[in-house]
Structures are given as C-alpha cells and as structure tokens.
Length: 231
Image 1 (cartoon, one colour):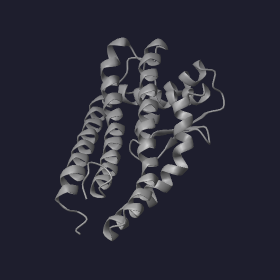
Image 2 (cartoon, helix red, strand yellow):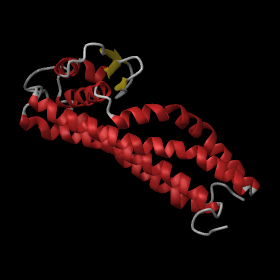
Image 3 (cartoon, one colour):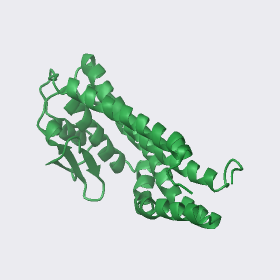
Image 4 (cartoon, helix red, strand yellow):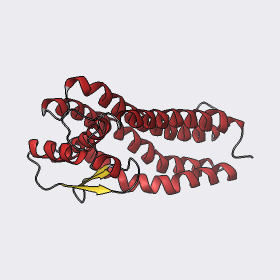
C-alpha cells in the first residue's frame, strides 16, 4: 500500500496546503501593509499591551520583547506577554492590534476564561497525540491493523480537539482587542479597518490548522474502513 496515494493528496495535502498558504499570505500581506501605517496616538505595541493590562487591573504580567517574526504570544504559565521585535517598539496600527490581541489572552487568563483553561489543559495530550498519533495511524494502515489505527486516531483526536478549542480562544482575544483598543484610546475608530484586517487574517491561520488536522484524522478513519464504509 502506498501511503501518499492519490486519495491522501486529494483529500488532505492539497486542501490543507491551499488553505494554509492562503491564510499565511493574508497575514503577511496585511501586516506588511499596516505595519507601515503609523497610529495617530503614536503608542507602541508594548505601551498598548501595558495599557490594557493596567485597565484590567493585571499587575503580575510582564511585557517583554522576543526574537522571531510575528512570534508574539502570551504564556499563562510564566505570565509573560512576549512581543516580536516588529511589534514591541513599533507604533504602527498593525503592531498595536497584535499587542492588544496578546493582552486579550492575558485578560482571558485573569478572568478564568473557560476555553483558555481547557486549551492549556489539553497541551500535554495534544503534544502526545501530535508526536505519536500520526505515527501509530500510519503504521496501523501499513500493517492493516484496524485496532491500531483506531488507537492512533484516539491519540490524534487530542490534536484536533486542541485546534478546535483554540478557535474560540483566538476569536475572543481578537474581539477584545478590537473593542478595547478603541475604548482605551489606543487607536482611533478610523484606524480600526487596518487593525481588523491584520487580526482577521491572523485568525484564519488557526482555522486552517484546525481544518488540516481534521482532514488528516478523517482520512485515516476512512482508509481504515471506520468511517464511510471503506475498506
């Protein structure tokens, strides 16, 4: 049996690559455009994040700079809000939008936002499923062992669940960023268009990741005859 057969290419690789490529292109294009648009307020990404943390009464989160392009993230374990070099010291509309989005995650954490808690809980299982689930399903398919494929699918399901839970977490952080950035005077209402385009494009990367994981799981289940009646 050839693993990377036509079905796999048609059902998983092509849709996944197209969606991921499209999402990545949108993010890069939007960020490149609006990273050149200076905000009227002149506030940097770091200052914007700190302003929102102060507004929410959060005093135990540290805003730090980190290397890597668009490597911005919030770590609920260390309580560090890391902003990339293109965001930390930049006063562009794009930088403020991304910084506010990450601050939105810190606010979620402070308010015990349930989906964020669930996503953090799923991290260890998703790591195991990502490393072992795919391999077990692949070996089960080669060996014709339906039970082995099913076991691998259970492991890999943790990855799919993690990706799906990530969606409301990211969408909520984006919604908070859009609303609070204007309410707190970090950007003007007229600048929301650029901010929205950057954040909406970034959100699509998570949608693409969830779809790609789901397609992979469905493919193996179909090839094993566990879904769709195919043997």
